[in-house]
Each structure stands twice: as C-alpha cells, then as structure tokens.
Image (cartoon, rainbow, N blue to C red; front, side, top):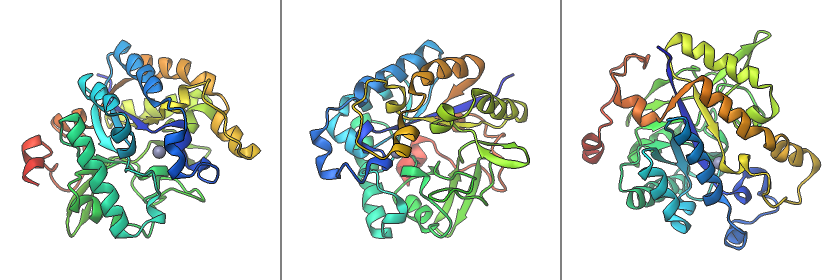
Length: 298
Ligand SMILES: [Zn+2]
C-alpha cells in the first residue's frame, strides 16, 4: 500500500513573505489587497478533488483578519496549525518575544477553528542550530510537534544535522515530535525536495524521486506550498531582480505540478498521520499522546 505523505500549506498572503520584508512594513499589511482567501480556496478545491487532506500552518494575523478562512479549512477536515502571528524569524526574536507570538497565534487559531492546535512551523524554517530554545518555548506554550527543520545547509536557514525523518526531540520540558521537510540525495549531496520554491525551480522529477523513496520506506514525506505560489495575478512587488526570479518564476507551473503530485501520491494531515498506530514513527521513545483530551490536559 502506498504511504500516506503529509501535505502542508503555510497560510500567509503574498505581501507577507520574507523576501519582501525590506519593502513591506508589517504596519502596512492591512493596506494591501488581500488574496489569501481566494488562493486558499484554490488549494482547498485541489485537495478535495484528490480526496486528500493537509495541515495548514496559518498566521495568527490571517486568523485575526480573515477568521472565515480558518473555519473553511477546518470544516473541510484539514488540520489547523500555527505559523506564528507576525511571520517573524525565530532568529530575530528573544525567547520571551517568541513565547508571546507562539502563544497568541495558537490561542486565536484554537478559538476560531474550535479545534486543538498542536503543530507549529517557523517562518522561513528559522529554527537553526543554536536556536534550540525554541523547542522549549513550543513545549511550554502547548505545542506537541514542530515542522520547522530543513535538513539542508543554506546561508539563511537549514538544520543540516537533523535526521531527515520524523523523530522525537528530547528536551527537559518534554518530548517534541519533529517533522522535517523532505530532502533527497542527488550526486551524493542532500538536496531539498519538499515543495515550495523547490517545486517551482527544480524539475518535478526531483520531488517525485523523493516521494517515491518515501513510498518505499513507509515513512511519510513532508510537502509544503504557499497560497501565493499558485497566484499568477498577485500584485508584483518592487524588489531586486534575483528576488523577482525566486518569487515569481514558474508560478504558472505550480497548479499543474500539484495536480500531478496529488495524482501520483497519497496525502493527509500530520494530525491524521499521528492518529494512526504510529509504527512508522521511528523514535526511541513511545509516541506521545496527542489526542484532544491529552492536549487539553496539557
Ligand atoms: Zn511563511
């Protein structure tokens, strides 16, 4: 039987991406025409047609301004998780600032969706070596799993030494489950194959190779995409040439590639994956109880 992989969406608007931080101030976010509801609808429709579910790491800011988006995602049977409130990198925050952001985003997402929120993904995969205190903050603020680690070596993100499979992170505050972003090996090197910009800029065959390997291993791959990545009509930002290429190149190819990926592989949410027997979760400790009752107990 084919392995059920994990489909994740980082729910943020086109003007909230990191690459635009220099030209879009957070205080100006309310002034931009929002496209996140429309774009999220396209992804919800895509998943429904393929009978797939996903985990939607949503900004607290988006839940505050557009609660109907969160309700629609949850009503369609997908999992709501947190992408922070202000889309600030962990590397730019103190533990106290991160605690506030992680707590506030979880609270509003639970309030709006009516479901427990136990998952977190850092903006720009910004839990990097030296910032492990973020795991403690996540445990303290009620999260049970993280999906922020990218087992690659990049100048601005990546945690090259993390195991490239779901695993437990042991901290004094408890155990946090980690779902690293999918990678594969190419010419002897580990390369990213998790979606997002890599779905746009790399040949589709690399992503397919990675998920086929996961199919054979029985361990889920973790795929990610942003709502703005399927939006050819988003307003263009005045950014340098390289950022323009990185952000807008091949956007027209994303939907056809997603159709193909969802046709070739089975996808579900992290919550659904954890609700199974957990045998696939290769860890040295038993799988922590993430049932809503256990989460409510803290
Ligand atoms: Zn993001």
